[in-house]
Amino acid sequence: MNLIAAQILLPLAGALIAFLWPRHARITGIIVAFTLVLLALSLAFAVNADGVLRTSLGGWDPPLGISLYADGLTTLFLCLTAVVGLGASLHATGYFKSGRSESDLNSIAHGWWPLWLALWAALNALFLTEDVFNLYVTLELMGLAAVALVSLEAHAVTAATRYLLVGLLGSMFYLLGVGLLYALHGTVDIRALSALLQPEPAAWVAMALMTAGLLLKAALFPLHFWLPPAHANAPAPVSAVLSALVVKAAFYVLFRLWLGPFAPIATDLAGQLLGILGAGAIIWGSLQAFMAPRLKLVVAYSTVAQIGYLFLWFPFAGSSVAGAIAWYGVVWLALSHGLAKAGLFLAAGNILHASGHDRVTDLAGVGQHMPVTLFAVGIACASIMGLPPSGGFVGKWLLLNAAFVSGQWWWAAVLLFGGVMAAAYSFRVLLHAFRNKASTVPAHTPHPLMQWSALALAVGALLLGILSAMPLQLAEIGASVGKLELTEAP
Image 1: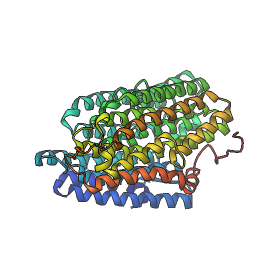
Image 2: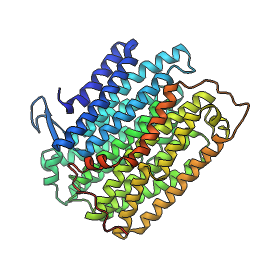
Image 3: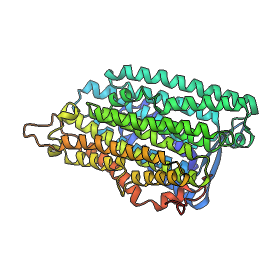
Image 4: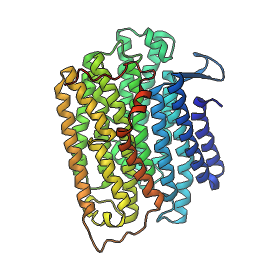
């Protein structure tokens, strides 16, 4: 089986096994998770050695067949998905048998494994596909699996329904744009469209429709209203993969389209508008995170803010030097945020399980009884704040360089404000959690896998900044922006 196709077929087979034989779902999920980490790393080494790799499913080339490809950016996102997926899978083995009745355990755990593995397959297919219609198919499969995962908790059904409706609306806009592109040029292949699209009204309408649909799915301000309740009310492993991977997938698609087919027709005004929405997300999401009464809501609104940073690439897209610096910056932020936020949601789930609540003002004693979990929160928050030497620091520093190189200093002000606010809501949580309270006794002691998986992901965000040489080298393979150059930065 070829390395590219295996990234999709293995989790799909695992989902089928978990559905048909639920008694073996847990061991199947863990085996698949470990294997996918090895496959993602193997693909990364292959791309690093041989450059961009392509394959066609069934032996048919486009437009009849489905073309898959892996470049440096694709491979980095596959590795992120594999690492977060392994962490969430290990956490789930303890989460779904800690402090629950047997009936709850059976219903939720039996739903988690097939849905999660199906979501994993859809994510990998999305990162690897090379045409805009198959991107729609993978977005739909991803969205349906994500909604079903949110609804595993009975109290999250309303949030899941809202998520479903928003996802369907976003998909409708995206599909209308795809149909318009096909009517214009008779192809849905990304490489072909990159050569064919010209600045004209119909192309601009298609770009606007597809962008609007993806903004809904990425929960960019002010279209973020569905995200906090969905992420805050879902089971902790589900919240982790939603924040770390699912919203990133929608951004990934938009990122790819603006680097490829939309690059010849995108205007500076459109890029600035997306940057303004990103700045609004940073400001609004940070303020809401600071005021949120529950820990999982803090982390959810923090996701709204952190997604905004990714959209600060668009104002620099028209500049060759600043655009390249910002490209690497947002890639690093996406990767480091994925690891840190997954760790934060898993840690928040540990606290909720142990204490029976996650009220920020009542977190006293957490540091006494769950030091590993609180250590994970602290390290993850350091990356969210952008403190050195974390991956978050590298990403924000590159965006600051892009702002000054391009002369657009106002984006630097947004970055600095976001960093200060991230510190404010992070320290608010940590100060409450570090307070001692002799009478605080955990209702349930979190399983060791739950605590160490959260810490491992948080440490991963830190290591992404320290060990950045190979990922940077990998990111350059197939990138349209060229190598990273910082010589013009002040």
